[in-house]
View 1 (spheres, rainbow, N blue to C red):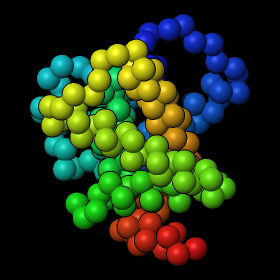
View 2 (view 1 turned 90 degrees about the vertical axis):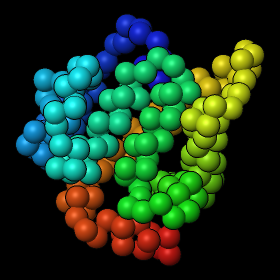
View 3 (view 1 turned 180 degrees about the vertical axis):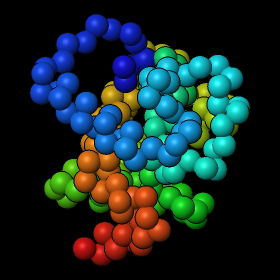
View 4 (view 1 turned 90 degrees about the horizontal axis):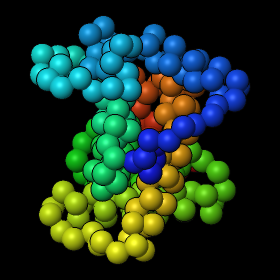
Length: 191
């Protein structure tokens, strides 16, 4: 789960029906021979990816690939780092002003009130800070407050990603997979 724990979880029938719809839609959109196949979804088979062509996969395949790594990680700094890879796969096509661009685009794409957008923007910036410190070998902190902060951050980032990916897969997949996605992201800034 978002905390890096394995726990028993109960789902409602409505949640299971929605999940089935999302997974079925994803499989319709997935590239043949994608990195994450129906059989592999939710588990990463060691070494099996070395024989697949990353560049032949569409954007949704790459997003689900990074999401699988995030969901499969119990170590919160690594989990949060992979979540940020998902955001990058969704919201960028270049490396310019990366953190700001992703935070801004994600906040605007999800929509909501001004306060919701600002909170989502700040959330992504906080998660990037963790990723940056972790990948650059800096201390993140090891006391109880830091662990609680990482847990809270991981839960919120997971929830935000869940709503973004649900919207992309169920509503905007054609646009997302088109060459117009970047233009659309630029346009929502000026709505």
